[in-house]
Image (cartoon, rainbow, N blue to C red; front, side, top):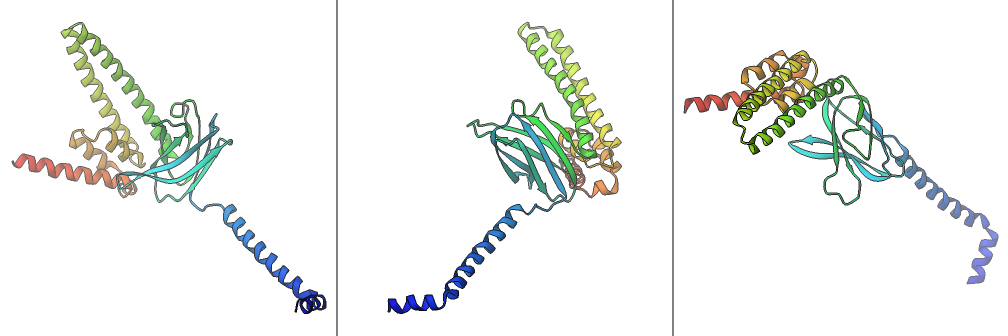
Length: 262
């Protein structure tokens, strides 16, 4: 029987060749499919790229808040090359976060926020000071958000100085200084709130307006919040943060009315 098989193969060598060709063709086809699936670029209307200077190893996450929960949208493993890129689909301008896990056992890692909107965003920073070395090139909302955050930083720095002075005055039992600092704090808080409301009204055509109102001065007098909401452009009123602000004002008015009836 074995003799017969040998003779058959020698008489018809093309049978063996054909089987091998089909096998190699199947393997090649599979490799091509895998290669295409690995190299095909992701589709989306938002591209976030950049570089984290000095980062050798770690994982970078793209995040956003969804239903009050911070969720991961995508991630990039960095191993030697500190450049990164995310491609995502975005329906409207919305705050996103970059979270860096340096894989060094640190419990609390670095996170930065930015206003994402359809188009291209370029982010550069360093591993040594991920949050402070940040530079972001984005859209109009991000530009205005950065402008607001710079002013907010000044308010926060002045507030920290007052806290320090208050601590020293308490140790020295300087009641006059404590009263003075209390007045200064109330004045500073009022300035911050007025600046934020005016900033929101002046940028009523951008989604950053309702966002900073909700996040920074949500407990302001309801009439000021109403001023911002009514000033918003029709497009922004229909946006995620526009609808959230309008709903918040409505709920707060109803709650205040209930309390007044008691």
